Image (cartoon, rainbow, N blue to C red; front, top):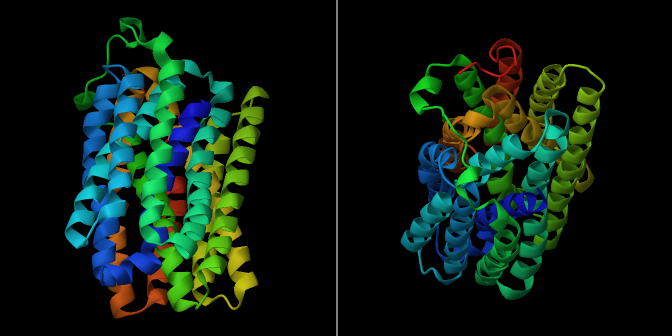
Length: 390
């Protein structure tokens, strides 16, 4: 689970590198805001649909080898971005990065449902949620320092090399699982899942939570430096503060939810409550950022947004695992992630167009509205949380 959390950590370090490099890369490569939005979106053009195939694969073949192959592809794609010469080459590498990173969450969920009991599900998913938070935090901090001293190209080269190193301990730890016995029998076909409302309801909820997180991940560095006039070091520290709050919240919420479950209370109740409040608080924090005055107020609101995102990142996959069970975890999360990441395709393009035409304030208001709709959806749209009988 530590290595799985580390993989998710590196996943978000590498996918977020383009946002960290943006303040210098955007001008160096002469990208418009709309082109930059396309670069961010390109990752999701394949990341979303390929999830369907990858989820099917991890329910039928060695999830451990598939994890290694995906990490290798995304590490090499990240490394190569340090040598791009323009919009076209950067676009292609972002697409390849998206293909490699598809393995993280279907594979991670498969491993959790296979090896982790229900009363430890919270802390297991907290390992992944910590990666989601600490990846952007460490990536923003390290990338910002590199950006200020060495330029934007070195960011991608360093991040790619570090990710490649992860493959060594992963191979050593998972060799004992590499046999035919690691495959689950009687796998569930995709056709038997497609008609299930819990899957569709979770996919819609996933769209709402991803929209907020990807907005902050991709656009925050540009917003703080261009619209708020902060220096790169100031931007780096503020963004890192928000991600650090997200990490602490994810670990805390994971521990609390496990304690709640071991005490004999309903795991479904606590996870639904965390998701509803998380979406509502995220909406308020994002809306506040559009009108915040001063660096301290911005820092406080980023921490609040981080706490909300910590709850969302933890429970989105934990609830999916509760619905799917171990037999269908890979396929379920693959489908849910494919649909949920549509916000990664359309969100950055919409945000880029809004920023070019109406300014950052409108983009923040739209993002807050999506988050608020997500809170309502958890109340009226997501059915009773229990394993679907397949």
